[in-house]
Image 1 (cartoon, helix red, strand yellow):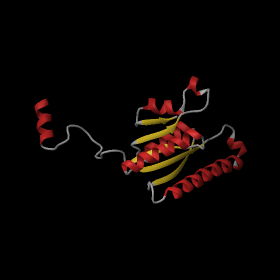
Image 2: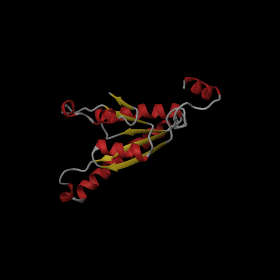
Image 3: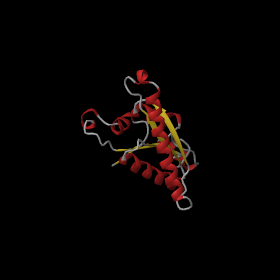
Image 4: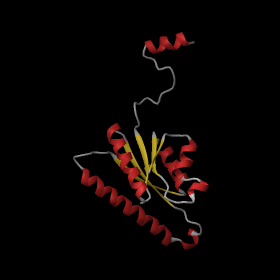
Length: 161
């Protein structure tokens, strides 16, 4: 069996399944406006620039308990947050134009942060996911989004402090 693998390698045939690329093509960065999420987005932008990958910046609009009863005000609030995040990203990329060019897209998904990032990574065919470390004390007990993404084991996950 080893001789067969060596023979395939010598002929330039890959021994096992490969995605067909060297390095990531799509890097998902989760943002929510927190300091750690901005640091994660900056780190992911650096990775995307160096790897010539697409940076997919993702904001997951929370589905709040009882939001159906509240209706439009909650939906408008989360839309405003998404618009503010997009404006900040545009400002940052404009400031770096000509110095550090990064191909990027902004996406919003609805749901809880973990499920939204999983859906985003699957739909965007992510090769890696970058998130900020949780700043909430309760996550030490029940687990953070970052820990849940790592445990899912579907993509390499980088957690930025």
